[in-house]
Image (cartoon, rainbow, N blue to C red; front, side, top):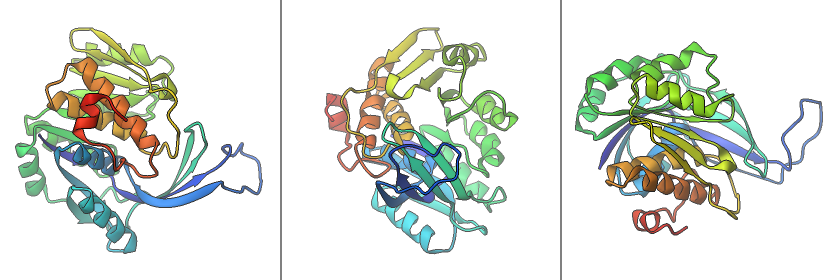
Length: 291
């Protein structure tokens, strides 16, 4: 199983609060905070690697201490990192988190849209992959044509898309499989129907504590609940873990209903960990349905 991920990697500070700020001036005392690897591309790559997938990540990192930490963590997690040097430095974010999984992300540095990329190296990796994942990053719109030209299935994750921004449309158009969060979608089921009507092979929407829904190319609908009674340590990366679990299931030949359950298990393990991917995540546990 080989996957090439094109996306973002960052060094993040997660600040855990009893509740998110309400917009008024205040002094806030976190319950705890920690620093860790972030970025949706990195999250998907780390979870896929934990699941035994051979994964290559193309991302931008600065020639700085944060970039060295991110690279070391990804390589240590089994990811083949192909990082271009970002002249603006390594992306860095501050995430304010509440106990229910709510989040406010503050983008201190988000990476350069003009990241210098090696198109030949990317094309070679895409051609050897079973699936190509193109995630949202300032530079990834530039390689959507390469992803489509590879002839491999293209998966993308729109995160908290609300159908109002044109920036997302090229990702939707280029992808065969589309994931999105329901946080800002007024009609998640209707959005999935629109994607299938546009020719997508699979459309999936995560709904937080309500699990996820999906629609396949034949119009079959699926629902998968979130696992109950999971202790939330850090919800950062839960959506990326869910995505990786589903993709692993599809590559592993599992029925889609089972693949969605794999995603739910991976997400539950991610929120029980302070990192993007749980150290305890592995293929045998996911196939067996064991957290």
